[in-house]
Amino acid sequence: MAAERAEVQHRLDAAESADAGLRQQRARFDEWQRRLAQEQTARERAERNAAAARLGGRDGAGPAVGGSAAVRRVIDRAMSQIGVQYVWGGGNGRGPSRGIPDGLGSPLDRVGFDCSGLMLYAFNGAGVSLPRVSRNQFNAGRKVPISDLRPGDMVFFQNPGAPIHHVALYIGNGKMIEAPYTGASVRVVPLRTRGLLPQATRIF
Image (cartoon, rainbow, N blue to C red; front, side, top):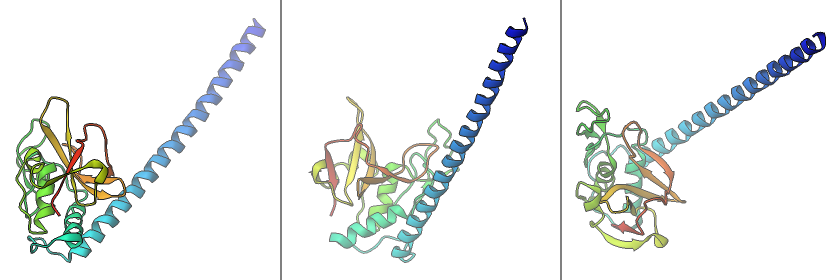
C-alpha cells in the first residue's frame, strides 16, 4: 500500500507540474495574441490616418479625374474608413449612414457601411456614381481577369448558384479592403479566393 500510495503521489505531482506548465504556455499565448492585436490596431490606425491626410479632409465628392490620381483617391477614401462598423444597407457617397435592420443585430440607429456602400463612398471621391448593390456594381465598368488585377479594381464574391453577394476593393500587394459582415468593421485583409469571381470590374 505504501508503494501504491507513493506511485499515486508521484503521478499527482507530475500532473500538477504539467498543469502549471500548460497554464504558463496559455498565458504566453494569450499575451502574444494581445500583442498581435495591438500591433494590428496600430497599423490600421496609421493606414487610416495616412489616407485621411492624403485626402486633406475632403468629405464631399471630388472632381471627375482619371488614371492613377483617381485610383489613389478611391483607395484613400476607402482606407480612411477603416474601423467603421458594418451596417447592412449603410453608406452612400457622402459617408457612413443608417442602414436596414438585418435580423442580426443591426437596428436603424446604427451608422456604418455595407460592402457596396463602402464602394459608393470610395468612388464618389473621384466623381463616379456607382449603383447601390454589389451585383449591379459588377456591371458598372469593364471586366478584367483576376490575373490582371490592379489597385482600384472591384472584386466580387458569389456562392455557387446564387447571385453576387459581396464586393471589395483591391488595393494591391495581394490585399483588399471590405466592409465584411454584421459585427465586424471596415478592414484590410488578404484577397480571398473562396467564392471569388474570375473577373473584376475596373472603373479607371
